[in-house]
Length: 162
Image (cartoon, rainbow, N blue to C red; front, side):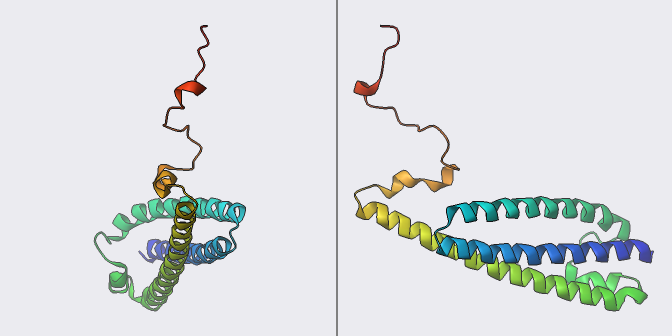
């Protein structure tokens, strides 16, 4: 019974390491945003996306292990009470480390999000100050590579049948 629990603890350690990497990327993201480095931001976002896929794979592995261990509905904080006695100390350490890693990641991600939001607000103010309409900056629609949804003026249209 302790072998599946050891696998589960190993998986939780991997999740903790991945969260630490994500925290580092969140700090990098805030740095590149402060430097107005769009190419650097793109690179960080690609790395985040790759780590997110790894995290998803770990979640799938976790979902397979949980029923085997009888841990359905057991929060992380209750893991030590459900593991074999010989692994309680190790489980307590892993849970503490994972909790710390998550807390650090959350803090870094919040800081990066706040930095991005601040810079987006500054962009909106700049556009408004220069006579543009910040509503035209609808940044929620995606990457900006889509065709515009507005029709060009009639004088700019060409009738190819003529």
